[in-house]
Image 1 (cartoon, rainbow, N blue to C red):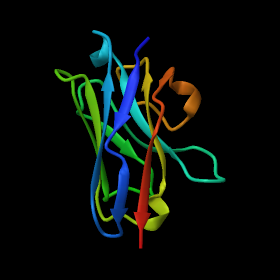
Image 2: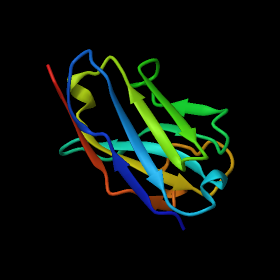
Image 3: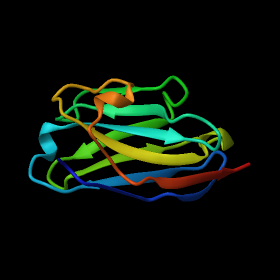
Image 4: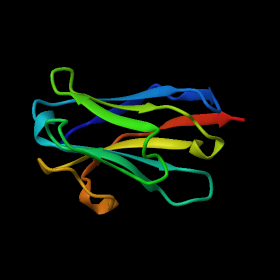
Amino acid sequence: QVQLVESGGGLGQAGGSLRLSCAASGRTFSTYGMGWFRQAPGKERQFVAAINWSGGRTSYADSVKGRFTISRDNVKNTVYLQMSSLKPEDTAVYYCAAARTLYVPGPRQNEYTDWGQGTQVTVSS
């Protein structure tokens, strides 16, 4: 089991950038694939991005491809989501999640075993 704590959310402007961080506890962080999800008001939680254990492979939702970058630092036990060219529709609570796989986790939420509490991102137009 790994405990996850997100940070870095807040208010951003359309066209601007924000970086989210997710700090993980435990010594086994590098054995987990990691993902980011988001949930906008009144909508279901949706997949944003995922990364494999080493950081060498990633996947993205079409809605964020080319604008968001997921990365990780296994020394710092942290996964990041760099968000650029922000849009008002990126407004949501962002969650990081851990999956017990060395590969890139998929977009299905049931692949992930541990979740953070979420951090709010609000993008103004």
